[in-house]
Image (cartoon, rainbow, N blue to C red; front, side):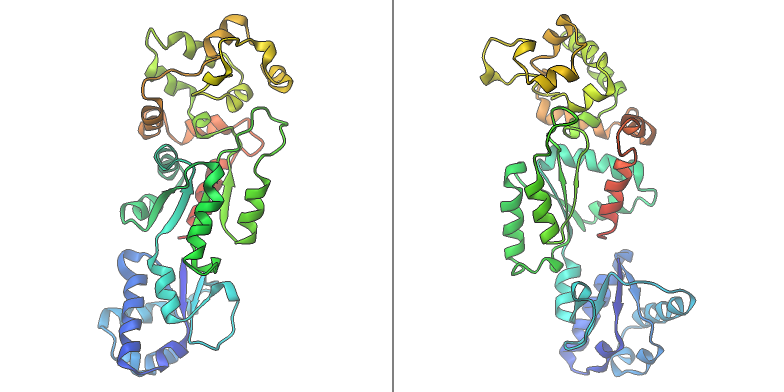
Length: 336
């Protein structure tokens, strides 16, 4: 994120204001968290500048030189009250401190499972490794919305703390599509409308859920006598069928009872799996019974021997959006 500080910020002389400017500069410059942008050489003539530490003066000098060499669009503008600028980018010093000190929130349905997935995307699709560094410095954090149905309640609580001023809330939301077949009506238009209303960055997965992005080779890691038949049946599915299959649950939930036959499925689901043999249907119908599935299955995203850029790209190569995973990473990088 590029943070521009306008000249008028340096033209106030109180001790409190100087301390605030000092603090703001430390937030921006510490470990290169943000890019400082100052394009007015007259800043160096102000009393505030003369009272700054030499390292801060040097950073300002470098920023002024960089502004001469190239043109940049700031993501955040710090100025004194009363000036005009694009409203969503305008902050006074106090507001800028509040805005820039907060970590970027990545809101997910399940912070344990989805965090493994996203950290894998950072490792594979962020060449700079900036996102993982942000995580390590706690400048980017995963937040558990407690399921899709609670996302709006969770975000409302966050926005309330900013008096519904969404420009202060740096947030990205990742949501499962929850689609059970390709042409199914999208279930989350109300969420999309909410995100747009509050200018919240978001992404709906093209596949059914995070688990559907695990490459085929990864399942070989779990191939035991007990799980082998299920894995073989799953790997015989087409890529499209794998995209919409509910891996942990299968075709039926426990509450569906003992009568679990193919003909009882939604007709569109039947159409998608029309070539599934009776034997493979019976193997798959109750889901992947990996012990402690919720905690153990997501850990596969940490295994670089099966989760790497090419394996993930192969997993999305047949999708409508083949570059989906890179786009997810880019959306998050735009917030930092």
